[in-house]
Length: 520
Image 1 (cartoon, rainbow, N blue to C red):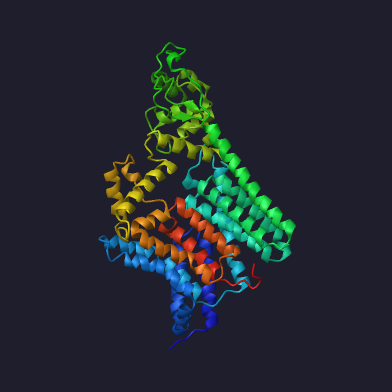
Image 2: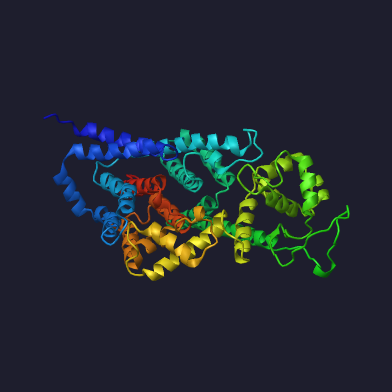
């Protein structure tokens, strides 16, 4: 029988981890292939008696396995077995990666550093690719999410960039001095890119994780000056972010003052305005449904654009609605005078689906904050949440809570979650369009609806307990991936896509089981 040496299997193991790290931001095929190779290599290597002893004596390995065991138990009382089997396949990374990494030959510091470098290099390539669109070098008036993040969800992509920043900071402290300048440049670029990407989840996760890491540094430092500097830095960061958000909130709620009894009735051309003061929807503090003269809008728009007034924008939106909202955002009346005030570039923005001139400001953070506040405001005033990321999440969460309430202890089972949501949406008579009736978009609510409170508790235990057994609850890199993951769970079904669960499972297991000889 042909036998291979342990050094051969170790080389395959390390090479597969490198392949996995570089494929995370891009290729689903390579991502799957690397994990298949990892598992096949682990099986062909043998030494099962030694591996079994490791599993028994290393509680973290089998505790993480409770995550997958809960999904298997959920198959017992599910009715849609096909959906359940598909979910089991999707969750395999959180079974395979901790098992293989936790029972394989520990990585050396050099091997570990190369893996992090390869991951950062892959992220760099795709940030540069994405920047081509963000900076408008493609010639388009506006870019889409698919342009700037074509291979992976832009939220999961933002989380990867976050992880790249904190990985580079670790490398900065653990490599030879001659490379430090390169890492500083990469850290600065990735940090800038996170804000250019305008992923609210990515930015919030980055800021919170940075603040926690600064406090960690303060409490670990033995030098009083360093400790106080880190505390002040973290509090300053908190103060700056809080004051910015408060200012943005106040700016949004600064509405124009109107006298409903004395609104102008006619345009400058003598045509009648339509006013709907009962509709409180606004753009930049200007009421959208005041001073509308649709005949003038239609006539003047025809002279400014080749796209039909009753047609669609390039992103599939209703052009008429985009035009009215854009004019309101500028404080213009919705008549021929308002349309004529628009520049040719602004006409292109409207054709591309921009509804507010703030959306055209590429390099600021306020547009994303404004959009979030606007969505919540409109949702609270009865607007249809369809198509609006934040507003839809309120509907997703409400539906999830109703499912949990009706299936409190054990949930609906591994395979019945989709049907449960569909039925609950109908029961709640949601305004969401059928194609926008997604699942929880909150990992905790998703598990609660699927497995109930009992299952959610088991799953949380499987993810929270391992670092205590491996003495990693204070480790810098493990804390980074743990915080990034759990913060993303609040706003995303992070573990429901192959990219998302592979990202979490890979770095969770890699950092959990790596033993840094320098103990940094």
